[in-house]
Image (cartoon, rainbow, N blue to C red; front, side, top):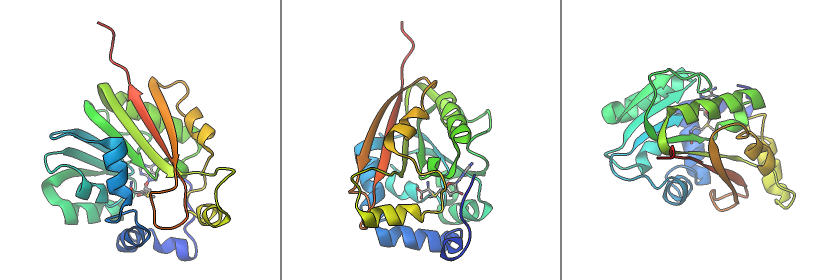
Length: 212
Ligand SMILES: C[S@@+](CC[C@H](N)C(=O)[O-])C[C@H]1O[C@@H](n2cnc3c(N)ncnc32)[C@H](O)[C@@H]1O
């Protein structure tokens, strides 16, 4: 993972600061996560979800109470906070999302919100490969990351250029990460997720079912 951890951006590695920032810009209890869950994840009751790079697992606030949720994050501090806040509502593991444990299998949905832009191409491909292996036949993965586009506003470009992640890409480069995976991918750029000028690339990655 390559991440800027100097200056103001170092504060974001503190779980409470990250959650507060996320809420302020609208990613948390604002419209961001609910919109992404409703329009891209649409989880049904009892859905089995693997959240890669789960952070403090704030997504759980927007998932059905019956979800069978496993969150994995490389940060001990974020996982500690997730356990304190959500307890038995999910399972929370410290781990690298590019080499997850083999027992993480048979999920309906794998999520990686805000993770690929922290990973170089080889790491990101490994994450997507592991996501495909962790899914049931017919399962889906959804990734969400900041994106550079030619038409984005200068403010959005400035904000995204100062993200902690060092691998913000264009939509085509995000899509290319899925080359060689079994996913059927649809890519959408959204500028309506946060309250601030910003652009997100959402990849809906569907795993086919084996032919009868
Ligand atoms: C921008 S935060 C997003 C957190 C959460 N998904 C959310 O939507 O709030 C990116 C997260 O990815 C985690 N991360 C980065 N590289 C990782 C890796 N290789 N394995 C697991 N987690 C990773 C970071 O620790 C951080 O919690």
